[in-house]
Image: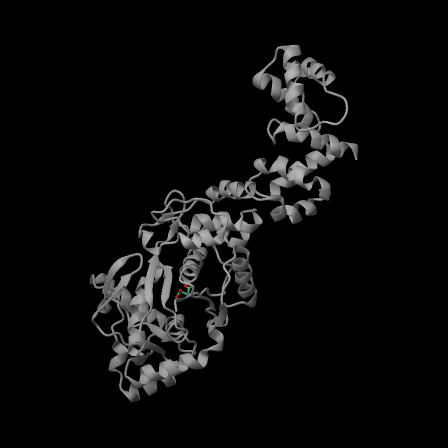
Amino acid sequence: MTTTRFAPSPTGFIHIGNLRTALMNFLIARKAGGEFILRIDDTDPERSKEEYVDGIKQDLEWLGLHWNRVERQSERLDQYAAAADKLRDIGRFYEAFETPTELDLKRKKQLNMSKPPVYDRAALALSEAEREAMRAERGNGVWRFKLDHERIEWNDGILGDISIDAASVSDPVLIRGDGQVLYTIASVVDDTEMGVTNVVRGSDHVTNTATQIQIMKALGATPPAFAHHSLLTGPQGEALSKRLGTLALRDLREQGIQPMALLSMMARLGSSDPIELRMEMAELIDGFELSHFGAAPTKFDVADVFPMTGHYLQALPLAKVADQITALGVPDDLAEAFWTVTRDNITTLKDLDGWWTLFRDGAEPDIDDEDKEFVAQAMALLPEGPLDTTTWKSWTGAVKDATGRKGRGLFMPLRKALTGQSHGPDMSGVMPLLQVIKAR
Ligand code: GLU
């Protein structure tokens, strides 16, 4: 069975970059009728916070990216310890004692000699007695996985054939001196034991993948299929990393962006498929093709999600927004008329607020001096009694005949006189609604 996972570290709220990863894994699982696991990578007890675990779940639920089950790395430490023991037993795990400063110095020397800054494996040469002495002096060392110095190859679902020389990569540290298990091994154990078949993640993980493939093989497991999506950049191609903090999903939700608008964009952005608004998740799932995504950095402009949000909302029937409309204080019997009149003039549901205030409180007429007489003449022609959706047309027709004005010179002063604004919903709907509400 196809099984994917989204594996955030709960050290912050998730942002648009994480969404790309979550969504691709979700879509692959759903398209294949498989399982999508939410895996909380919380092996770092200092930086992981329950608040973020809850926040991540809320954000995914808001988007409709429902998971089949949740797994937590902090509850699986025994499994990681067992895998570490196995690596020790087969001679692929060794303790190293260099301090960060020493490692840094080694790297600088290598770079000065134009050599790649790869860990020199000095710790492998230590005798048991020397290790004892180191431990007594510095405490426990870190545990490194001893890579086989051969090429590590895989066919990447997005990047194509990848081949990495293991000798160009440092033996990865899998356990810290204080005993904390690091993500690199935890992830390998989880992917194996949870039957993960496909892993999609950002291209910043390519080197991790190379080492993880070797670790998996050392543990006797078969690596999943890997794919690495390109990183997102800002609209000008600038790195997004610094701005990701402002692109947290909860902030986008707060700004009124609609899930389906955001998902429609992110499920296709960076692929050869067109970005089109989809109203239902099923359509996104059907049309999703991982192989259509390219390796080039993907430009993202949050401004593009607003018009899509507007289009999404405009296509909704009242029932889908009734709660929000009621919350504004719109009486139930006017909700349909209010939605019909305003929906083409909103980008987010927040905009409804302003329109409702206008209808409820009435407008301060805005009449330019040169239009005063014209507006007075027009008002005198306004029919008595209840207005309906045909009134605007017949009334402006009569005003046109009486004054000779037409086009913008005819409509704009009347709109401004009635609504106090130079733009807004279709006046045919506005007029009767204004009248009904005023009469209450
Ligand atoms: N916790 C890791 C991260 O957020 C997961 C990476 C992965 O998908 O393996 O980067």
